[in-house]
Length: 164
Image (cartoon, rainbow, N blue to C red; front, side, top):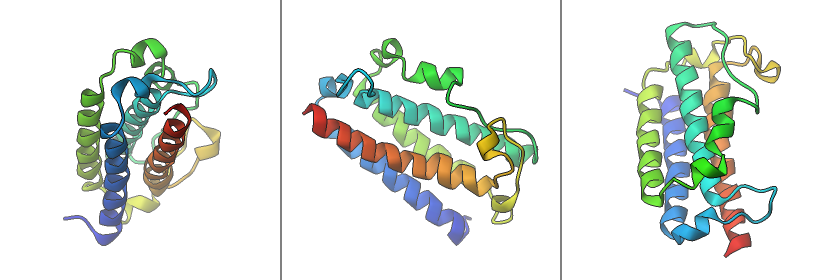
């Protein structure tokens, strides 16, 4: 059973995923591949990044629950992060498939958080990213997953306003 503290995080994450799914469902598929500028990601690149990033952070979180205190994290040049937004990779993604993956990701988030105790939230570990070194597990959940996804939802909405 989830504690209130954990349950609130699950509800917040589910809402952000539902918000992204709704935007995707209401958007023509071809529009999702349009970039507002050469420097900005397409909508599908944003979604691909969300899928990869949350998977990455959940995997690290799961590992830290098994082996507390181990080094975790990455920087912005991590190969999986870069590959997820590669235009060649993103061109092969389909709207229905990413919607299904987002829904699965929400289930995985809940399953992973069901293993987290309130005490786990305060545990710290060293990080490969010096900016995150010594941060508690709550930082991974709150900043790197929940707020990250909420931010990319806003980015997706702003992006679509530019290209529609």
